[in-house]
Image (cartoon, rainbow, N blue to C red; front, side, top):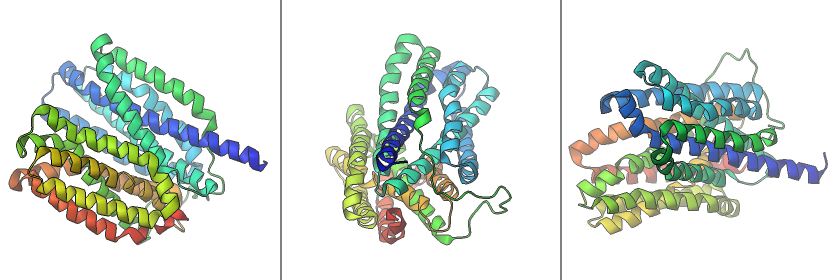
Length: 386
């Protein structure tokens, strides 16, 4: 293959990866809009809904480990192609079911498909980065945020106009069309060593990958604290009205998406370690400002600034995990994804308990301290530039 052909393959592979990230985020954002009609159709309480969503999370965590093993043995191209298919077709099943037990099974499968695809597409981007010799991870995560924004923004309109099942079918058709265009261009993992089927150890012994996983856990827990509790914090502790409270998360998510599209150029210029360190410091100071703010408008600015700081932490950690010496990218990414997403799945419950005791302001101050500790470990991300 000539250099020009290789360049074309990698350009198309990057576009296919961007499509995968967008579709994953689009389906997740669309599911969020299905939840109210889902509750009404099943006639369940908020407690039962929490248990059903917990099934989604457990399915995701289980599939992340399985996907890592599939990537290690068959490659990210094969695994991503396989796991994209259930992501495309499963939302109509969620929108159609009327039985609680069937819903629990479908949501576990849904979470598994989303989580497994997450590992596979991040591993695929690591493979492309290695062949390109430069960072592209942040912008790809930006496409996930863009997909979530599109799914959430258009979903409400479609459900109100056509109904939940029709909305789910349209989402599946659009996702299938987008993936059909990208499917054959998904990049191969050239040069990535395969793990033997007889490999007896699923979990590697290197301590570094678990330290990186803990950094992802804290970073993504901070993200989850904004996602789940920012509106309530604004209303309950800063006395903001509903519209103003909504601006907190809107500012956070918008700033995060924009920063992710700029993150690769910053990282390529200054390196992963320096970018991670400064991002962690910005996130920590912003969280501190959120916790200490006496005014809603200052908290909104601080939440937006926090989005800027947190935007590049997870992408750099994904690149770091995928480039760990002596480890297959699929295995290391499955550990990072499982630990990191555990923060988003389970931290909000812990935050609610602690916030009920001491107030959410102290929770955000605590996250400022934790994020400053994460920034002190920025040297662990040097492998991202390998």
